[in-house]
Image 1 (cartoon, rainbow, N blue to C red):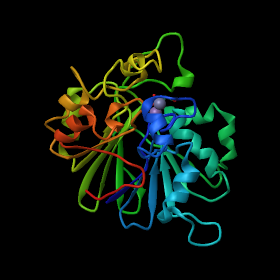
Image 2 (tube, helix red, strand yellow):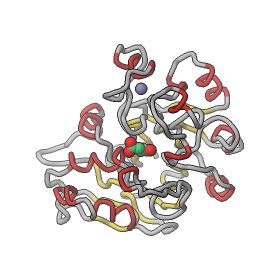
Image 3 (cartoon, rainbow, N blue to C red):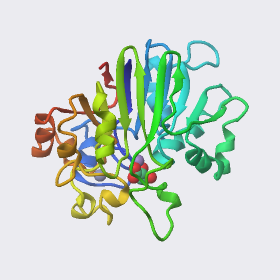
Length: 295
Ligand code: MLT
Ligand code: MN
Ligand code: ZN
């Protein structure tokens, strides 16, 4: 099993169009590498690929990664696209995949309902791109030789579908993690998670590799940096640091561990920051666009 990081950033990307924070400005100046929005590709043989989350940057992400180029007139090595929630950073890229080339589109019923409620997604021809509803905790074939299972993780409905009251730790079909098994390895991809529950810890104990929500370093990061008014947890993302943070909660998971879905405000993006050093000292990698990872 091999992975290719297509987009290490959270929604908005790095730099984000309207953000003049230090990280975004450094990315504009080439001081730190820019990153596209949240997406990960996976393959067993390096020839056929599945894309986990279709980011708004998918056109550039495919251009930048030759293994995803067409091999003949009107073709793609992408067999399937799997969605882990209905947020814009994970679904908007589908609109760039609308040119009549078949692939399988896989998601839970609730996530498919988000697409169904937004007619613009009908531009992706359902006769070519079959929408396959996947149940929780039921293994299915992602593509030849690669088995995946979706499971509920605490999260919320997509930002653009929030009502007046929002439950941020809903466990259901809205926000899922993915377990993948292939080539003798077990991988988990969890780009959004509001709480690291004991149940989640037990579930991922067999991981060889874990890609996990690295959106914010601390819960009030966006408030503190003056870039937003919501906490990480309110956005459905457990912070890395602090009480109940992922660094502490996942400390005993013996897998290769990679933070992904990293918000542009996160201090781990700065090369010599104490936060980056702390994360790396705890054995974590910080995903970068174009990075190939073979567990
Ligand atoms: C998130 O992960 O919180 C979302 O991507 C937010 C957004 O849609 O901008
Ligand atoms: Mn997101
Ligand atoms: Zn920024």
